Image (cartoon, rainbow, N blue to C red; front, side):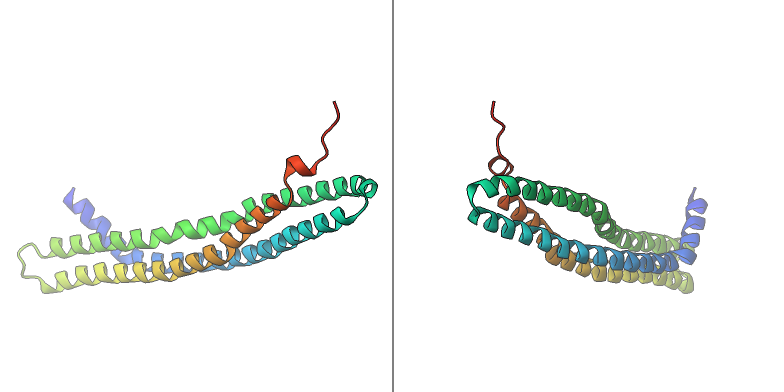
Length: 192
């Protein structure tokens, strides 16, 4: 069993650092895609929530007859646009969710490299006379740890930025829209 683990650790020694770098490139691409989609969604929620409040203000100023005729269709149209926006937000928000979740892999791969490298160092240095074997294991352990943590920190900074400036803003826009239109008050009740 010990030799099987050693072979696995040697295999990880050859592929783990390139795998972390490739994952970093994939994560950078997902970051670019999610940033673009969140920017579009932020612009869209500004339009929807801002237009809804303007329509409501202008509708209230109209006479009562005109209000009933035009306000209901405007409200229905606004809610339809809002429903479409929420669908796009759920669909396009998955890119940001994937980006946020992949960040954890960098730290885990770094820790895996640390453990594998230390195992290599200890296995090659049974009698503590093989300094070269110890060096190779420790070098592998530290390089994967440093690479994984550096990429995790960089991408986590982008994650915090996107969450603060886009996700929170979009969620606030959704709340603004919903407060502008309270479904129970804005839709006329059917007479029984």
